[in-house]
Length: 76
Image (cartoon, rainbow, N blue to C red; front, side, top):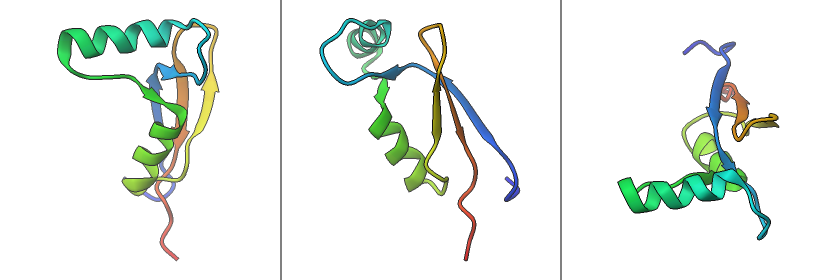
């Protein structure tokens, strides 16, 4: 991936707190049916930065998914 590339991820981001949100229902479905899970904002940031990307810009949408935008971390 070139240094000037942009990574776009379209995913549900589980919000903090106890308010209802579709991402929380999807998280439960993932755990029960396939042993996976949806990620929180902090988990996405950790995942992307630990794999060589800048911390993502997370843009909520009117749907149940968010857009996560990141780019490769530039070497100094």
